[in-house]
Amino acid sequence: MGDFLETIGLLESKFKDLVERYLFLKEENDILLTNIEKAQQKTTLKEEELLQEREKYRLLKIAKTIDGSKEDSKETKQKINALIREIDKCIVKLDQ
Image (cartoon, rainbow, N blue to C red; front, side, top):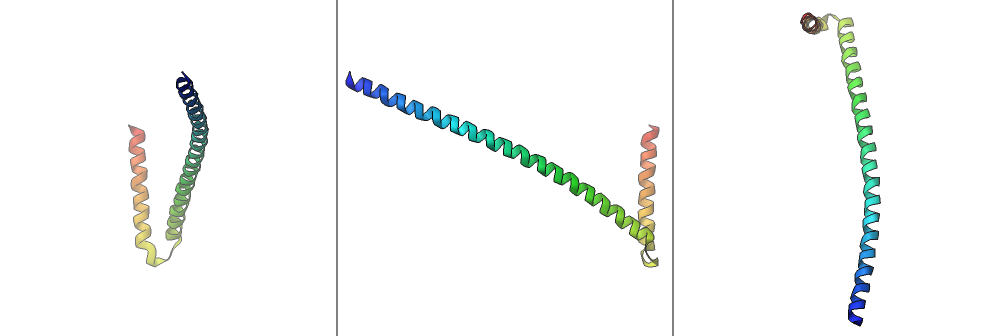
């Protein structure tokens, strides 16, 4: 009977340790999930900023070529034609 009680006591002790480890890991997991969520939000914001900066750069580049010298006139004409095609596509979509 003594061995049985000893086994139950050992089992109870291991169970308590297991529950403590579970609670610790659950708390740690919650913290890590929160950190992941924050990191994803930061990444999303940085990606949006990057897209905005790329668009600004593209517009600045277009403005410089429009404002540019005679050497850039061919590139400027190509960009203007591309913009006109883009506007035409938008008009077609509006008509639909």
